[in-house]
Image: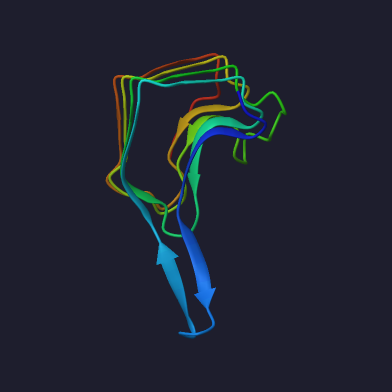
Length: 128
C-alpha cells in the first residue's frame, strides 16, 4: 500500500555544473519477483526517467486494486508501467487485476520487450 507507487524503478539525469554536462544514472539489471503490489494510489509499480530501465524482469507478481486516485489512462496509473526508452524488459507470469487503469504497459520508445504468460483482467489493456 502506498500513496503513489508501490515499487519504483527509475533512471535519473542530473546536470553537473562542475563538468558542464548531463550525467545519467540508469537503472539496469533489476528483477522484481514475488511481490504483491496492491491498493497503491497511482500504480503498483513503475519506471520513469530519461533512458528508462534496461534488462528489467518483472515476474510472478500480483498487482491489484491500484490507482484509487483515478489517474488518467493516458498518464501513469495502473498495475505496472515502464518508463520511456526502456529496453529488454520482460513481464512474465504476473497477475494484474482490478486496476483502475492499464494493466501491464511498456511506454513509448521501448525496444526488445516481451509480455509472456501474464493474466490481466478488469484493467485497461496495456500496450506499447
